[in-house]
Image (cartoon, rainbow, N blue to C red; front, side, top):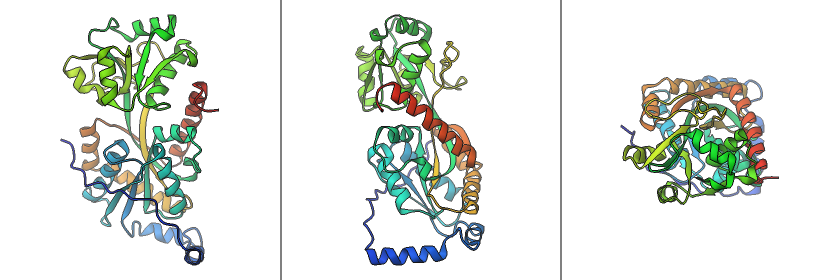
Length: 344
């Protein structure tokens, strides 16, 4: 059963502070910084001392929003904290608008958190974002969803091996449908092409804004095959309208009757992960306290129910290990987008 979600809160960009007030605020921060005179350690010992605010850098209803609200609910109802939580939305720029606001307005505040993910890493690479994830303090990677390669039920292709054979022989003959340009779906198709020796410019990829457009295109034959999240195809598989050829996980997924891409002989695995970051300039002690809070939440029955009800994989990784993971993701995604000609 899906957990009920609170009514979304949209928070506009905050107004600029008058110069006099800004100067006063900077002086106060300079005198009270958590990184000086052991202040951070004292604050961390009592953490949290106020409500935890979680930004979803997108409109209500999507993956970032659901993740943020599920985290907030699990922290409160799982009795991890008693100070309360607030979730707010800052849409725009595929997450980069929210990221810029988060970094520039919340430095040093461990009570502020933001949901991030693979899609945001790609968006940063494709835009002139003022900041990137190196300007944040990584806390934890939490969940993952995987893509599936699907074809209509009456398609001539009954296996990924058959589809890839024609893809290698005549790349342009296979029309791939998926999500937005530079998103997870196109990255998956690009990596499949690379594994098959197909040049990026030969790939016939058609982007759609969402499942509402992609599904009719797949069923009508406008595209040969589609790449999208496994949840996007679940009802269509159940109704017998589409067939899954493979999933992008490293191992078979319980409840999904499809092999992995790796099983088909292509070393390709793509996880659409999501996690949490804190603002820059929090102390090591504060970061440790936030990580501990999230790890406690991870063990609650409420969070485990969230994972089960949304078919999210438990993908926990924290602290410096998560920092290194983000750096690797940035490098890999940037290279794929450059190969596709989407970035310089």
